[in-house]
Length: 232
Image 1 (cartoon, helix red, strand yellow):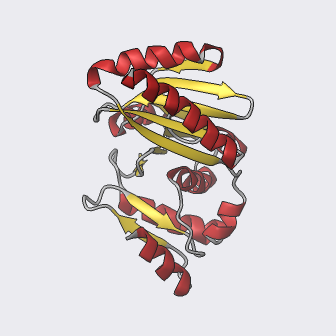
Image 2 (cartoon, rainbow, N blue to C red):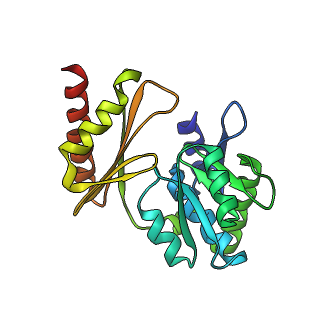
């Protein structure tokens, strides 16, 4: 249980807490202060270490990741590259851009110099290297821009997904920016990304803002619009 890991990492004064899923192809991390790390934060920390060895290199992440990654990677001297969701699409983008590191939003980390697949073992190695080079994770985390992310998974019949995406794009057309995997909505105080799931009968939504209340309000507004349409 990740809650137990957070507590054990903190009370034992460990530098890092590590948990893998049952399949062993994804990994989660906990800081030295017992704080769970979001995938976007892991990408940012590993990216910083990668840039020290491969300055100016591309870093690939999926469109459902935090918008702050673009600015973070640029500030590190790297080139942010977005791909559609899915491991194979990340790998394809990595090959296209010669990126040494890529990740998807579910916690799969890929390292070109080792192997083109989700590789939690190498992610653990790179995280330990990042700590050794750049200091405690709690300090590195404190230096990252603070954003709040609200996610929603909305039940949706398979046959309605296209209609839902068209509806929400038209309803908020002044903010909509279509991409290959869904639609971004960019407002002055935050962003929303919506895409149809490729594996479940769901619409996936991510709202993000530097203000926690704004992120929740955006997520509630867009999810309410979608649920109202589905249930009409």
